[in-house]
Structures are given as structure tokens and as C-alpha cells.
Length: 290
Image: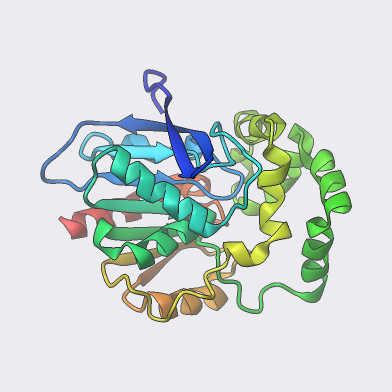
């Protein structure tokens, strides 16, 4: 993204005596004929993870991207992280920017947060574009994986594992399986993901999904959800953690109106891994909404 785009911040009071400084950026100009777009990153990510996508659309749409609380350059307080908290942040941001309706493009945990928000505030969402969303896992988590997450969730072992992985080498090893084109996992990307791990509070926020996995699931959302507007699932064919043939049918129970498009030679981080194919699909989706 352009180096001329500057970070902006707002102080979000998310509880009576709790607040956090949230980072965001905005791009392009208001276009009365185009609904603004909000990009929301996935677990461990930050708004820079959209740097191969946002420039393709900022000439027509007003675009916003923000770091979720606990991630990127947003503050990382010791609070109970959850999809509900992230959805509340989306609502606060729309209020801050006086946005009546928005198109949300979300990846992984950000996409799950968008679904949660759309379920409870359907009138605020023009469309959902969901890139390899998390929140529903079916039977993809085998026994050993479940045991691993149980260990990570225990304070002592989780803290030890965080210390082991909170460095460029650990980040590289974590990112590699989420990319088909592993040349994309370069020093720039690794550093983008590694720097926030050194922030005060990062250990708490980054371990929250393993300590309280139920807070990051969509199982309690009714099927179908309250959101009846346009929805689109865009999936990387090589996502081994969330294989599309197993997971897409689960999401279509929540969003039966959602069409699904599978991009070959792309894994979990589809928007960055196969950015050209993802951008082409997103252009088609946005054109269909006009």
C-alpha cells in the first residue's frame, strides 16, 4: 500500500472502565455510487496483510482497514477476547466513521467476526466477502490436534510455546503451512507478523483462541443466520487446516445464500497467497453489487 497512507487511531471504550487504542487506515474518496469497504484481517494478522488487495479497489471505493484489538498495532489489553468483542469493535468503528452500511471483506478470524456482526446487525451490512473464514471446523480437528490445543491452553505450556514461536523463525514456521506459494513468506511478511508479538499484552491476546476456543466459534449462531443479504465464500483449494469440501457446507448452513468460489493453487491466506486471482474474484463480486 502507498507509503503516503498514514496510521490513524481512535480510543475505544469497550467496557465501563476499559479502553484500547485502535489503529486503522483509510484510502480513496467517498463515492456516492459505491458502498464503502471495510477489510478485516485474520488471526495474528494486521491491516498490512491486505497490501496486495486494497490498492486495486481504492480508486473506486472508499476503503477502511483496521487492526483488531489485541493484534497488529492496536493495543493489547488483558481482556476476554472473542468474536463478540471483535464484532463490537466493528460496530464502534462504523459509529466513529458515521457509516450506515458497509461491505465487509474478512479473512479467517476476521471473516468469522464479520459473520457474527452481520448476524446481530444485519441492517449495517451490504455484503459479506469471506476469505477462508474460521469459526466452524467440522471434523477437521483430529485427536492429536485437539490434544495440542489443550496443551497450548494450559497457562504454563502455552506461555512456553509462545516464547518459542514469538520470533521471526517461529513466525516463518507458522506462516509456511498457510501459503501455497511459499515465496510469498519473505522477510517483509515475517517481520510484519513478528513485530506485534513483542508488544505488551501480545502473549495474552495471541493465546486467547487456544485458551478459550469456544469464544472464537460460530456454533451458537442460528442456522440460517439473521443476515439475509449477499454473501460470498472465497476459498483456497489447498487450505489443509480448513479444507473447503468439508467446511463450505457448514458455512452455507449459516448463510444459505452464499455462493462459493474455490481458487486453485492457494492455501489459507488466499488473499495474499494468490492475490491476483482473489482480486479478480473480488472485482466480479463488487461489480455484481452495483
